[in-house]
Length: 186
Image 1: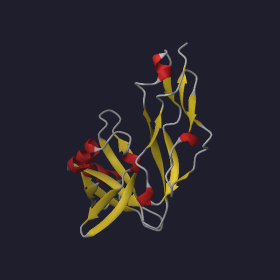
Image 2: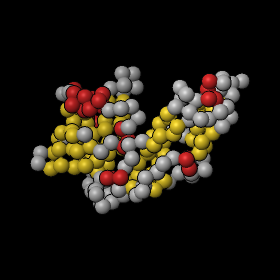
Image 3: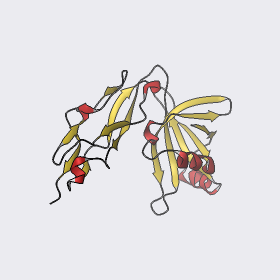
Image 4: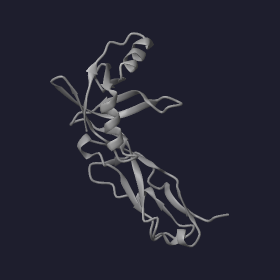
C-alpha cells in the first residue's frame, strides 16, 4: 500500500488539533536506531486505503510511505480513534528494514464454519486465540493463518501447532495453546 506522508513540527497538543482541522491526520514514524519523526497524512487518502483493506489484516500490511523523494517501508503499530465518532485521530508507523526481523501479530482466520460437523450438531465455534505473534523478515510476513474447522465435532479443538507456519517465520506463541474449539450449548 502506498501512502503520501508529510513532515510536521509538533511541540504541543494544539498542533495536532490544528492538523486535524485542516483535514489531515497526525502520526509518527519510528524504528530501531531511528529518531521519531512527526508526520501527517491526508485524511481522505488514508481512509480510502483503510476502506480497501480486508478486515483484520492491517497489522500484517506493509506500507510504502512516500515523503518527497524518500520512500520508507513501515507497518502500522497503533491507531487512535475518536471515542464517539471512530474517526482516526493518530497513526503510529514502525519503519522496517529488509535485513532486520520484525515482530507482528498475524491474524488467524477460520474456514469451514458452514460445513462444520459440530456446529451442525448444535455446537458453536469459540475462537480462543485470534492472532499469533511471530518474528520474521518483512518480506516473509504472512498475511494471515487459516484453520479449517469443517471436520471438528462437538467438544473437539485445534491447537496453534496445527497452523501452517511458513519457513522463515518463527512463532513467539506457545504452540500447544488451543486456538479454536467447538463448544456445547448449555
